[in-house]
Every structure is written in C-alpha cells, then in structure tokens.
Amino acid sequence: MSYAGPEFEPPRRPLRRPLTVALAALVPGALLGWVVYEGLGSATDDGRGGPESAAVRTPSATGDAKEPGPSPTEPATSAPAAPGALKGKVVVIDPGHNPANFRHTAEINAKVNIGTGYKECDTTGTATNSGYTEAEFTLDVAHRMRTLLEKQGATVRLTQDGDRSYGPCIDERARIGNQAEADAVVSVHADGSGSGNRGFHVILPGAVNSGAADTRPIVGASRDLGERIAGRFVRATGSTPSNYVGDGTGLVTRKDLGGLNLSTVPKVFIECGNMRDTKDAAQLTSGAWRQKAAQGISEGIVSFLRG
Ligand code: ZN
Image (cartoon, rainbow, N blue to C red; front, side, top):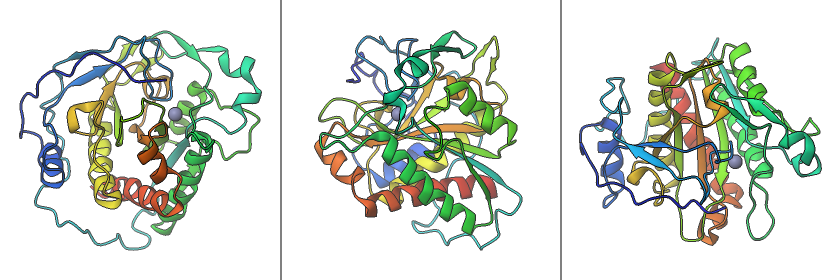
C-alpha cells in the first residue's frame, strides 16, 4: 500500500528542538520542521497509511514539549552502558504482525476496540519483492534487541515469538506492555510504501482521550523515548529519516494506532525502512544491517531508561 498524502507543509519552528538539531547535524539537507501527522481510521494498525487515508497535518500542540532529547553536543559514539545497568527495568518488544497471520484472515480481520473506534485485530504486514516478509523481519530484529537488552540486565518480554497461530490482536499487544508495567515498549515494523519512498520513521502517540484510550499521561515520555531511538538509529545504521513522512525529522505523531492509543506505558512504533523500495529492501534483508538496526533501537531504549 502506498503512503500517499497531501504535500508537507513548509517547515516551521526550525532548530528549536534538540533532536531536530541532532538530526540536522547528522543529515545535512534534511528538511527541518515539526508537524503532527494524524492518520485517519482507514490506515492499518501497523503504522502504514494508505492512499485513502487523507492525512491531516496540523501544527504540533506539543511541539514545544520540554522533555530532553539527545543532546546535540553528545559524542557521536556513546560508550555502551555497563552490564547490569538496566537491572529492574522491563522492556516489552512488540514484533509487528505474525508470520502465520495470512492463514487466519477471519480472525485477524475481526474488529477490536481501540478507544477512538474499531480496527482490525491485526494485519499480515508487507513484504519485499523477493518475498521476505515484514513478520519475519520484525521477529528477527526483536530477537537481536532482546539479546542486546538482556546483556544490559533488562527484563525483556516479546508480545509474540512466532508461538501463536495468529496475532496477538493490537489491543492485546498494548495490554501485554501495560500488564508488564513496562518501562518502555517498542513496536517493530517495516513499511509498505511506494518505491522511491525511503528511510525510517518513529511513530509517537498523539494525545488521545476517548473510551478506553487515554494517552495523555504517556505522550511526553513516549516522545522522549522516540527521539532517543531516532537519534541512535541514525547513528547505528547510517539511515536517513523518512523522505515521505515526518518532514525529514524521522518522527511522526499519530492518533489512529490501537497499539499506541491503548498503551498506559511509554511506547513508540518504529518503521525501520520501506520493504517496497528496492534500496531499502536490500538493507532490510541483510542480517548485518538488521543487527545495526537492533543496536540503534536498543541504544535509544537504554538512553531513555538511564535518563
Ligand atoms: Zn507493520
């Protein structure tokens, strides 16, 4: 599904946010700016939008939030945290989709309540032209992250480990993080956008207060988590932020994802690249690149948890 949306608005408030500065230093030429992306209900819950999802972009109400992002003066290579530094911390990794979802169409198409409305239980996810599926990708990156984070002493839980016949549904994915009282949750995905659309983006929860969804208490911390992950992902992979959403910041805020809306703990999604673009696909299918991706995401989590 391609990710067509209206033109981006011109950058505003450039150079005011620490991450923007950090990314600008690392990615010269990136468009600077800050917008809130509000996908509408027709987008699937894997972070992908669709041509039918007339995206609305408005100036960020929280764009001046004061939570710290990575400092632009931070050294380019940070020393790894000491082993055991994350003792007592709980990280939930949510590998997007499930390799067997395609065999359970009826179950994954059943609607679940996400507070702001109803959405499919889960989706099959996308795949590269060569047939490497997003579900395989997300599980592989999740396993690599688990190894890295456990080395730091964190307690790591996966929402699924290829051990279910389908799903879990997006509401359960959120619930698993909530019930674990996770200190951080990251949902790992790769996008299925049009060819030529490249790069990663981190999806942050927008402020939602509707039905069972109330993200207001987690918006600030999730933004902090997401900014740190985006910064470390750039460093670890050398990837540039998405050239098709987020105005070059690698950050997008959404209010239509059940996995974020129903979370009561700090949580973000990351779309590591676009499986439908051959250059991005070459990276996503490389084990060496996936190790760097897992490292970048994990370093962002470590940075967030250590403050
Ligand atoms: Zn996905």
